[in-house]
Image 1 (cartoon, rainbow, N blue to C red):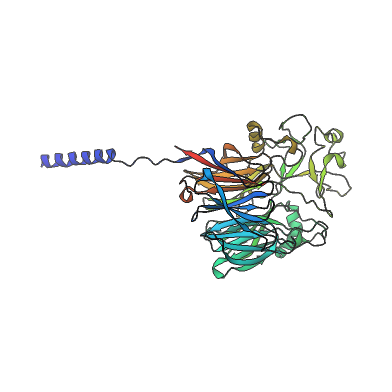
Image 2: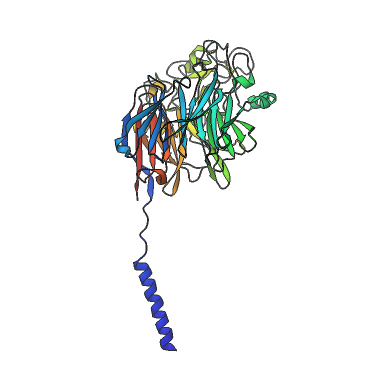
Length: 502
């Protein structure tokens, strides 16, 4: 019996040793702090390379190009280090400029504005294999952004509905929901159902203004993100300083979240407010508030809570009939609120800073009791269920841009680095956000594993005015590694980055 037990014990030990000797090697994982450029392609000048979408079935990149001709360029992406334009899809048969593209399961969807920008726009759907037309759908005015739901059952567009320059034509801002499986049937939603809440929303920082002061016409949807289960969407209302929540099951707008304001007089929120102070990116506290006014938005769910990441660019209405931006040196400041108003109005202090003329005269006496500038020079995180802010990057993007030598001091008096595009992807074992900064010519990379405490990883230099920030996950990538594609609208340059493995 003893010999039998000894034999069993020896067998177990040998089996353990064999298992250890033959153990599978540890799979390498990607390090999201090590992205480096691996490819570049110039497809034109200003107006080219605005937004990109990737099709893994054909290894093609589809890129908006409104440089000299309105078109979508088709790029061979089998080898990202040797990209080449192989074809183009002309937009002339469908209307005017193409503003955005999205891809799902061999289908390319394009958001195309009308030649008359105030008329209804179109969504054109093509096969990615041969570019043949599948369907053309009429949507709201000026479809500015398009996306597929994660399950591919919906195509959504944010229809900005901008007025013409004289405000004689001002269409409603809307959101269109296209049911792919129902012969592309479209439902277009406006915001009339919230008109009765106008004053309550404004009191929380939601902006409703324009010639005629029409609630439905003044709302301008900008960018969309959709939950992983394809049941909920959120839309930035940039000029209005809000986010709308949409139930895709019932196809209804359920909430508008006003975003409030940012205090540049608070610790950590210091800004460089002048382009003529002979200092590059030197920040200080100022009695000014920032209007978040986000452009890009992306959702990341953690612990059952959808967190909304926004790039707080800011945007002023500039039309013949309405120009809201003014420099502080050109307005009258309340003497009681701003006892040092004469100093503040000098160019080296706040005189050059652009503010909105639609806010700030709180007592209606013609002078400014508060100052509100465009954008927040940051990215923020919001609870997608309640609209509450859970994080703001404060002035870190400015600080990192200055340190990297990409801060454009000439934009200090306006919106600084102008965070515009944002996307989220899983890189290795970390969830990562990529923030494109239009005026810094760079993309900031953040670890968002804890969405309430994003951690800066690196800054990537890119083309001029990055608009599109696209992550291609490793499973879909032609290199089998994660790829970041940045498309820049001012110089038409595409750049591709990939991380190292560890």
